[in-house]
Length: 208
Image (cartoon, rainbow, N blue to C red):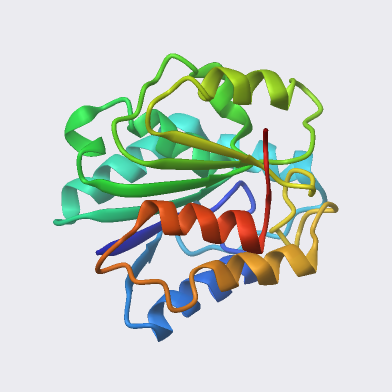
């Protein structure tokens, strides 16, 4: 099993590095898709980060990077995406030839998914939404996704970017809890129900 991490518009933050390290220390193969190709830009605020992402990479560019990575790897994959990274994975799942290799996809605050609700992934998907979003109703999106066979939605008490130390919504306790979700997790015998239970117990409030 190989893990692929797709960061948000801030790129490789200290949290992403910690997450990657936690997998490597457990002997798990992991690849982080860096939209900035190793550069570590410093942003004044979220708008600055978004404008830079659109100019340097963009949504379609990120999707192309993920598709290229799929073509260059073999075997089953576990995907972790954050914000725009999560939405990028979701778009990729519209391609059955690629989606069939995904053993599980976990996406955090994937706000752009609201534009792609017609996609019906055929692999296990766990989506973690924040308490609220500025531009759309989280509850409406989760309700639409709840009708899909392989999708499980959660709602976290944090706000968009709660795992990102560069975000004003960063919550250190939630960041630590998320890292513990994958501690000593058996990727060789991946149990999707167990993973969802870990997410629910360690980090989230299930949306009911």
